[in-house]
Length: 312
Image (cartoon, rainbow, N blue to C red):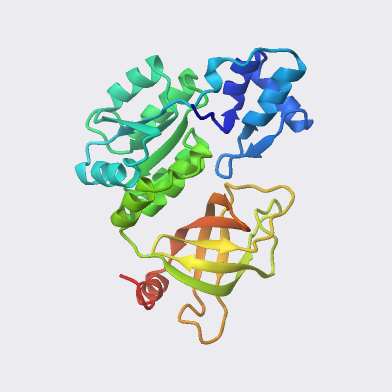
């Protein structure tokens, strides 16, 4: 059986028999190795590092290092959103999706069952999804659980400060973005083969390949990216976001921070396109690729994307 490649601090603490705080300190000191979740900035401990630690301290490797099914609770009574989510993710056999329609059901199940990620609609027939999130975080149940809030309004984006780990506006629903959000939160590589085939079938917006320079800057001092010069290449773009390469991060990356992206290349069909963007995924291939979503973009600039050759 295959093994999990990365553990949360809670999972690593349970395996090693130490506290989460101790795991975090050992990671910060370099004793335990891994990576940080590009969306939540949470420490993720590598299997190899856990195994080496256990070997050094003569600990037996427990069965919990075996790869388990990833449990997702999808809470919504919007049938089109539920079906779109299932089509985007459903072919990945590692992920088990449980669909619920009421906030009260979500509260009960999250309190009594272990779950990896909660995908919840803000509009539910009994309890608003925002209140479900506040209750779960206040009760401190499933503390390692990630929460993706899906809303009809940008107003609910404030929930990123009140317990949600990521946010999607349902009117901008993009199955590609759903996959990027979900796999990014789980620090999990998309399954190859059947999942990718289903993904291609289920894409709502076409992704157009490009290779143009992009200027990126951030207004605050704690910047997610270095400001003021062309430091990235826009590799491809869709209605909801883009993929960048050659992106220079500051040493203190803040994946929550929004930044501005602009295309200045003269003669490009995207010339003068500008959008407020946010990092949602890092992909390590031959180079580091950065997936971003467009948090704010004008209708005029969206029209430029739609009118690109090959767009649908």
